[in-house]
Length: 370
Image (cartoon, rainbow, N blue to C red):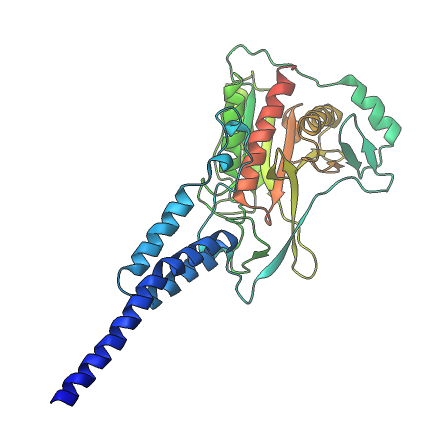
């Protein structure tokens, strides 16, 4: 019995010694893990916490998670923007998604981010700021002479609607977050107004309203349920508003582009504006080849050029060259009718919405003569 008793006591001491060592090392372990968290990505940090929580005694995992939460929610004072600069702080992708949005599946396609500018060929005509990509038979001299006329309209600012924003292809949409891949199963279309072109139109509209400009944002999904015939249906919408509000002078059809290479790689046109990623915008101004019933296309091109100069002067790099081509896109219904491609299906929704805000600000400055 004495030997058993002695053996029991000996084992108990060893166990007690291990326990004391573990408790003594515990604070150091927690400090080492939490100190490493700022250098890990979000997903790796969570994995480290989960792993530590399973390995440590009861209650320690909770302590570590509490420490992590405190670390994440209490940044160092010098990292917090002052009240004077907070409004100018760089934007993040406002639709940050979930961790799953950043996990690349095996069948994903590639997205390449690229800033577009004018090429070296003679089809690019320089403006005061920005370019026109001329793919018509008009010479550079003809276009330069036509642009001397300036915009064919001025705003009255009398309270009546003077700008109409609409969407022939409202269901065009974007990636949920900024990333270097896309899912082939996603059609890049959505009927949810919070995720498609209507959301970008909302951003433009808000800036015009803030500037005191009368604007109507039509949210009809002219491509839903049928994509075919969208321009015919949007023409009916435009004519209805022009008949009801003769004061309307600017008619903008807001789209997004789809830029994809032969191997399936998608291109996201981007620019860094004020420290934030923005989707580049391309203005399309149509031209009549003599068969379209669109004889006053140079009036629309003058408006396109003025808007291009304003955008590029305000936010250098935001624009792709204006596309001047044999197209119509209902622009014959107004001397201020244009089609704007805001980014492409490789951009994120947050980038496109940010660009919508910038377009609205520049358009307001242009229309108010600022």
